[in-house]
Image 1: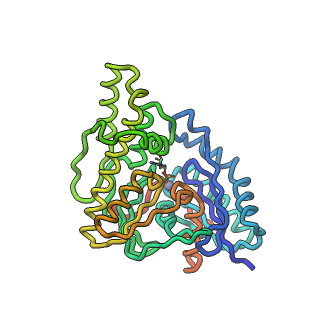
Image 2: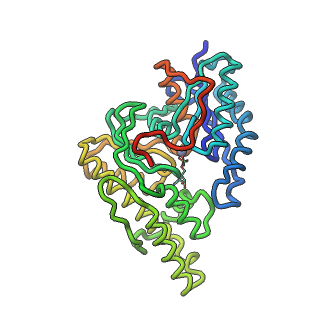
Image 3: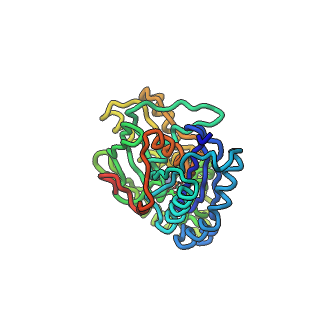
Length: 342
Ligand code: KG4
Ligand code: ZN
């Protein structure tokens, strides 16, 4: 029986394929692209070439791990955007060809929407899911938004960054300290050994529910540069405290607006999503705020928080149920299509 969804994610530097039955993830294979480490950031041309090399083996592994045959797949979902165009083209071309060859429907998924729907992904250990409407702080390398999630595909952006994303702030701070890309996981690890109050950096004063992270990055850059003049080993000697302090600042900035959003909307189901939601300090801060303000909090499982095809598959399954299919002429988009998005 045709009852499985195959999902493809290729928006940035991870090639991923997943197989789902309903919202249950049977396999979720991710090929990371180490080639970018040498350059301290994602090189778009190299990313699309690596996707080309990875896509067939990754899909093959996802189907094998799910222990199904490809003719049992009832639809293929793929990330249409936002992301790097060259990368998106690989996944979307593959999905279109697969849909044609297998004579099954094609489903396009928005990447950010996918991150939010990662909260609904199930595996062998069932997860409790939020009720609509809920608030979701969606934080990744490309986005920082507070969303009022009215329904699976009805995301209302009520706050957003006016410049850098939170993930970029982590990545840029790591780069300043000479740490590898992506910086978030490295800072997270070192921060556990450090004192978040050791150093402080200038914080912006942005009204309402919006964010700004570019000033923090500049303040961090100047701070480190000045200290290095006095002591060339400053970073090495203080890396734990530096990581804990910059992470602490980012988390405080993020949480302050989430608390305000919950007060303004009187919504008490509060979630985080996107790559930065893997941050242990942010998770702890959300749980603490949940206790303090009597929220019910939701955090996606680690394997579904950074870029992965399982989250695209959850969106794909929900669209499949609604009969919302794409066609062969739909082109990828690089920038977010949400109203009011940056
Ligand atoms: O969602 P994602 O995988 O890709 C985008 O859609 O951008 O997010 C990647 C971002 C990177 O900036 C990375 O440094 C950050 O998520 N990230 C983290 C952690 N894991 C990934 N940031 C802080 N702490 C982490 N543990
Ligand atoms: Zn992402």
